[in-house]
Image (cartoon, rainbow, N blue to C red; front, side):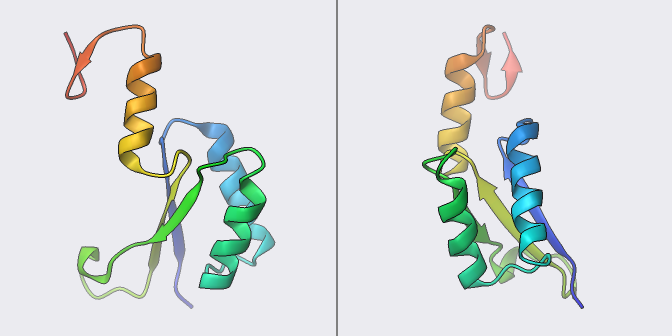
Length: 98
């Protein structure tokens, strides 16, 4: 059986990561289109813009059956970065402290 890995964005939101793990466990560690929809609907109570997306096959490295999904708390990686930048107390340019 293939392993399922879910990468969360923003990566430092431990609460979001925990809720994704719980939701995945409730679906026996499997992510199908039906379970993706169910997980998104369940998480929208806390995260209205949440979105799960499977990794594009061209992004896979090597011949693996492992499955990678992305969980975007704020709908996309760009939105997560914008929110993170807006709440950061230190000015940053392309991830670097000025």
